[in-house]
Amino acid sequence: LPERERAELKRRKLLLEVTLKSFWIRKGSAFSTAVARPETELTPDMIATGSWRRLPFKPYNFSSLGLPPACGHLHPLLKVRSELRQIFLEMG
Image 1 (spheres, one colour):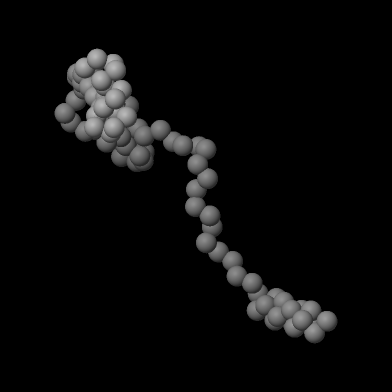
Image 2: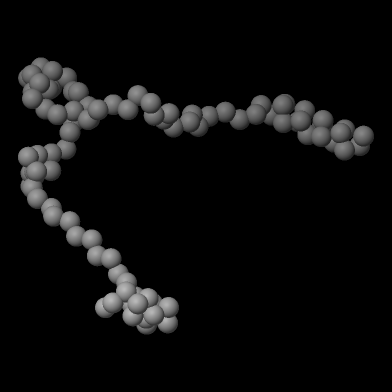
C-alpha cells in the first residue's frame, strides 16, 4: 500500500502492523543428546580408584550466603523482665 493509504487505514484503526522475527538455530560444537550431571561430592572411593580425575565437578559458589541458623529463643527470665518493663512503661 502507498504510505498515504496506509496512514489513513492506521488512523481509522483498520490496519494493524505486525513485525515478525525469525531465528536460525543450528547445532553447535558442544551439542550433545546426553545430559551429563556434574559430580557434587568427592568421596573416599573416588580418591582410592582415581576416578575423580576424569569426572566433571560442579563449581562451588563461594559468594552464596547459605541458610540462616535456626536457633535461639529468649530466656524465660528475660521474657518476664521485658513484660514487666512493658507494664511499667504503660503505667508511666
